[in-house]
Length: 247
Image (cartoon, rainbow, N blue to C red):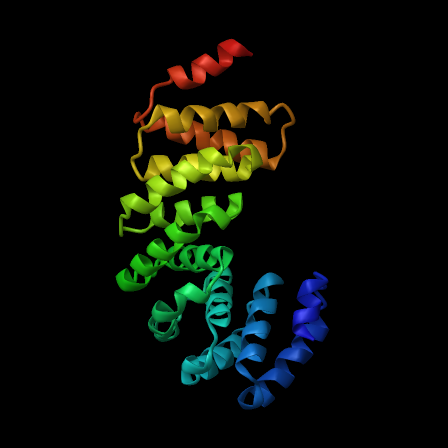
């Protein structure tokens, strides 16, 4: 029921409260798929039901070895989306995930990396394994997954040059598919990682300025990211000035 509400984007507080109460009473009878789907649903609807989430975390921790890789990814994403840093659960998910990352598709790899960064959870063995697996699957990544992975590894203290260089190359190859949000996030991430290649940033800025005629939230975000990047001093303002001269 919770999963269906999330898919329909139906936020009915009395209904979700009732589902939560019933779920807590029956939590030990849930399968791992049920646990994963329920926490995913509450995260999608941005409902931080603390009693339910605590019950799910405890049950997941006790049965983590039964989880399939996608359910591990969905669970850590859900807790990250709700900004809940449950250290024992995160450590258990990391330990259970490392040997099974090859079973994840590119989006779930990206989601896992994003979740670790969002929760400031730096597990070096897990992140190193995610980076290696992501490089193998970059060609299958959509723009949002590329930009989210770049953001995650630019944000965390564990640097991975081969991954970021590979993401940069794939970004340029697929740049025509990127929307303004993806472009802005990518530019920010590459600059945050101290990449200084004009051959990377110039096409990104060109793409941003092609699409900012209509001012909306994505355009504002992309322009803010561009200003931040140039303000760091790692790149010259000539990149922006050249675009302005072109109109």
